[in-house]
Image 1: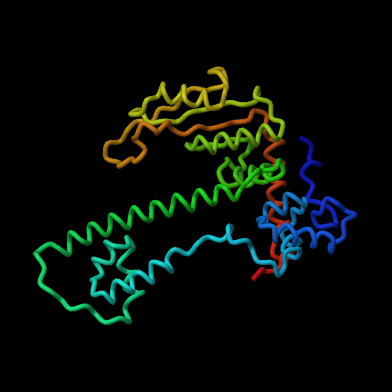
Image 2: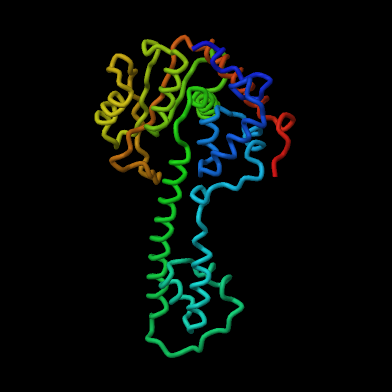
Length: 299
């Protein structure tokens, strides 16, 4: 891949169709917005990859309802107040709605307290435990739904986006400058390793330059982990160096002791000094392009 694939754009601010006027593009963007498309869908449709220009094209046009995250707590608040007026305690409201007692307190603190009645010993504790369990289940469902919605918002990733992601990823997680700089990226997350290898492929790094080194605790399934990583990267044992096995210290409380623990894999690119210097340059280019001097604060 040549560097020209990653030029930051021309004076049109990221508009690929140089003959299209701003007014014509705005008419198209507004029409697409009113059809119910998201910002990302409009961006991909019009090939407008500059967020400032896209915001100007869509100025005054509200987002479609399907892109807005519903605020379920409005309904919970109304229901909590209704139950409080019926004489329920915080524990019973928590059991009924599955929300935290601190939230309930904020929602109903202006309402009169219910009359206290005699209850069997331990009733409040059991209700509180049931309420916490229900609240945990509700939060788990909300977490899953939010994660799924956010994942769907990403859509397709272009080569340029992958290029920028990879530069930032290496800057955050990769080995930094040394007397003899080289490319080395280590992580225990298989998805992170796959993404990094996909980025190296985009850069044109041949698999013959790749070497892998596994670090893992002796209490783990070392052979199983080695086989797992070989299958994940799609290369045979000739690309793997000697596995580094760490001695287990029984006084430490390690959390990575499940069957899913497969150690930490280092990905090294041989003859990577030139690539390392280019990564540094790309990173500083990203910093410069996104500096506050170029992009006024948005409200």
